[in-house]
Length: 201
Image 1: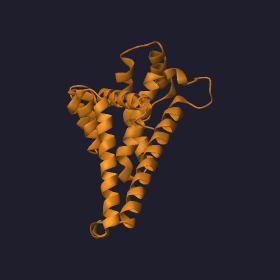
Image 2: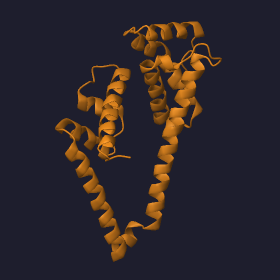
Image 3: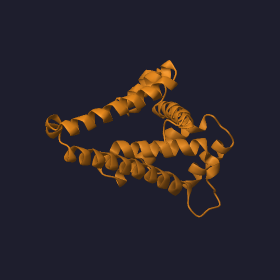
Image 4: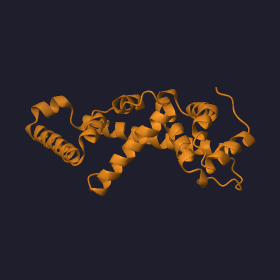
């Protein structure tokens, strides 16, 4: 496990972030991110390590973008705040994945593929659902520019790993933290645009 760090050192990076030091996030990541990731991964089952990692990095990026949200006068230390945010993020991601898998299992158990194949009514419902999903995807893609269309198609194909989107954006030369930040910025921008268009909840 990565070594912990003392509160004074962490608060110094906090002051640098508040002062607008552009070099602080990278230095901050090298010094503290391994510990945050390791502590978050240790809290959750190994099979969720990728989601724990995502939750920790998101908490780190959110803090770098909004250091003013931390109040040094509060009793909770900055380390505790960062770890709490990372654990909360990871927990939300895990719950979301569990719900998705449970929903998929319910659907598959209600209408196994073999029964759909021989049940005309079930086959018709499935075909209608497939057409609706395809129509929704086409409507979304039609509102996006060419680059955003290709970016969103990766998401529709089930791609989630940062390195896949980083390769598409040709930002592989950046550090992992910078890649994650850029990919998240693109996802948030596209998601926000689609919400304003009423195409996403």
